[in-house]
Image 1 (tube, rainbow, N blue to C red):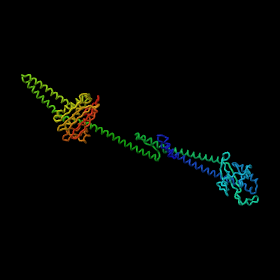
Image 2 (image 1 turned 60 degrees about the vertical axis):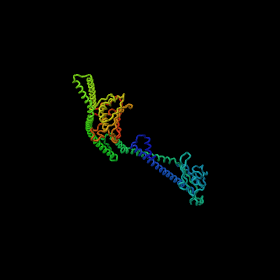
Image 3 (image 1 turned 90 degrees about the vertical axis):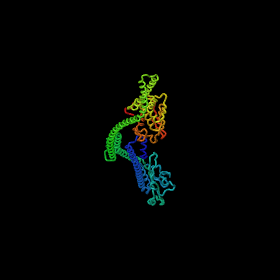
Image 4 (image 1 turned 135 degrees about the vertical axis):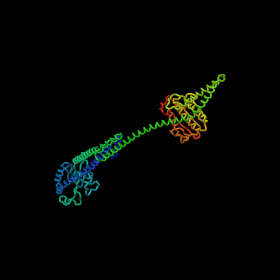
Length: 553
């Protein structure tokens, strides 16, 4: 497992919480240390084992040569008892398991165990297979094949060493038992030594090496923990805590990281950034305060200007209606004058006939009717021109529409405009400000009259649509261009030529505000030279909006 895969596995087990940088570094360094010292221990123990075995094998070879040299002289003199004595004495040495000598036919001629003498050994045995494993005995045995390690009867390891006894000139020239010079090997010295003590020493050496490696790894790990804690973990925690305070708006925070390394430089960069942010926030705060003051002043100025413009618009609308009101009042007043003169003349005559008295009575009725008509016109005019908000109460929508139509009826007649009025016969009660709705309707009527200079038709209809009243005002005038429709409710916008525009351009803007205060909606449809239709939806509710502020349209 690599360090990266180890860290990935740790992240998976750690769950959704991020692993701190210090822990990641510690895990990475620990993994590197463990792998390094494990590799070092493996290589070191392997080299130690190889050197240890080589040392044991060299000692065994020297021991075998010592035995061979010790018995060489006695064998030349054919002193078998001396050879037996030497072999038995050497076999008593610590760690020596067996010492014996075979002749060229595999017969044991000397052995520390006298019961083996004269017995022929198996050529497939451990000591013989080295030379006789291929069927034909070797002329000479390689050095690396003279040593063997095998398991003993008790399960312990045994080191076996065969040392060929070569036919030297001293042997085949001796007179006692001369051998043929054609022979290469006269026999084999087989020495078997227990590996228990060397193996115990090797195990102790391995334990010491492993203990040293573990101690070194622990010391390196402790040093790494201290190093990472001082140079990484603590500075990073200070940086994280400082950035969190800065993110929370504490721009006076100063991150303290000692030293001259990258962490200290990073902390210095954070502190400089924080100082610049603090200065920028102070400047923005100052600008915001100044802008807020300016905005408040401009809002107050705009509010005053709006109130003045709305008042001007109402006065302009009132001026436009003055002509219609004058025409409307002129006819009844003229009738009042004429009939009052007739009555006065009849009263001046001393003798009157019943017919003349009846005529005077009809004249008085006409005078009363015309005077009542003048009073109604004046009342409607006063309602329209009154400043300040009205009261929301239950009104008959048909009566509100009829009241607005009565104000402009004479002007419609003078402009040769045919009026089509469709009202609800019943169930037309609406919580509204009747005066403001009349004002809105009069603005629609005025625009319709202006759009039909050569006469036309004006249709005013009231219908019910579920929980709302639908009010439609449709004319057959010049219409509104398509590109101007989205702007008809904007203040100071008008489609009339400048020479014909007498108001301030706030008529429909004021109407839009009135409809909005009633919780309704307004929509205009128009085609050039085919007329305009205004659709108003007013919700049928029993509680009206709040009382409008004084001075509003």
